[in-house]
Image (cartoon, rainbow, N blue to C red; front, side, top):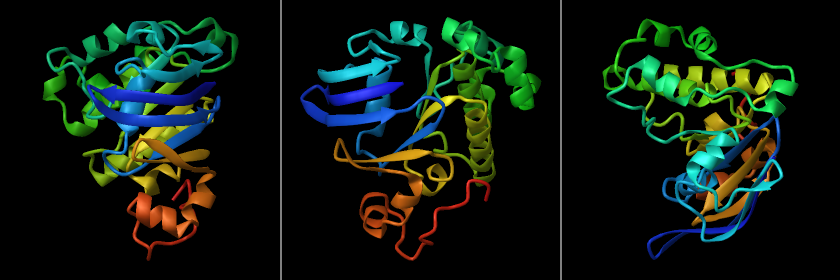
Length: 251
């Protein structure tokens, strides 16, 4: 579904992504892990056209999207749940959702599955229905994350990119985000999950990539990663005394 080949992305003269190559398959959760500052957010921004790669190729669903502007990539049903939520502070919950709503693509309509509209989002997040007329800046951090996810879902994505979805959230809310990702995965959603929280991500992912200094330095299934103490401690900051078994996806 998503093929990234040797992309290089800069902020001015700062060379952030230094030849990233990776794939994300249809209908699974692919995680991109790494410490803060290794390039995960820049990768997400490059994928949706917010920070365009200067070199390399990004192919989505058989189409080269490397040079497309963000609105054209969104029109191909790629949704972003951005780092820091970034809901529209002056708009109500309803307006935040309505402005992003998009009918399913023909490819999505042809397959069985949920159509994401406002009632479906309110079924998933009843709290948002209760806060329907509240503005974005009147919501808690957890409610803003619900809104950011709901806003991505009403675009009926073929691929949903989630950038640090657990950042700044209370532990109980993180558990709920994890349950949501598993539910979407069970319904066939394709998800790219960029996360610092490796213990959270490996519970959900089918395949993982590890980033360091703007490059992918390790790719494997989650169990193989969790059994690699050197990768965990040096690149992910997981204490060496942690359990070597992959955390249960249900625990």
